Image (cartoon, rainbow, N blue to C red):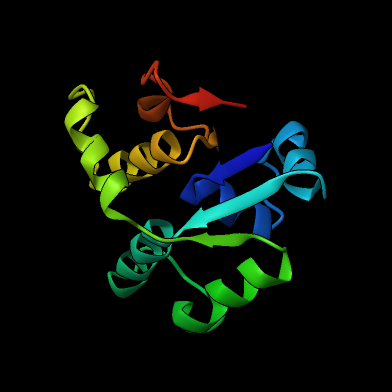
Length: 128
């Protein structure tokens, strides 16, 4: 399976947070799965770090790529075809980070791992 991690799922995973379900944890650790983290999530974390809303043990510009690499998670860039998917999304909520993640999942046929109720409202997205 090709899986796209929502930002909070990635953060829960790297911090061994008990909110991460065992099902999601096993899927992320399964070597048969291809796991992706969008640069959108890195961008979101950088902004929240700058606002003082998200602490990290070192600069997120260093820490997040290290954690992604350590856990064999691939980086997913934002491409024009993914942005073009925005026109197809119903206006269920306004979070630009979530909307871009949804577009990437659609464009690249990725299964999303999320606990975000707003994202789960999009019926065209595949979820684990």
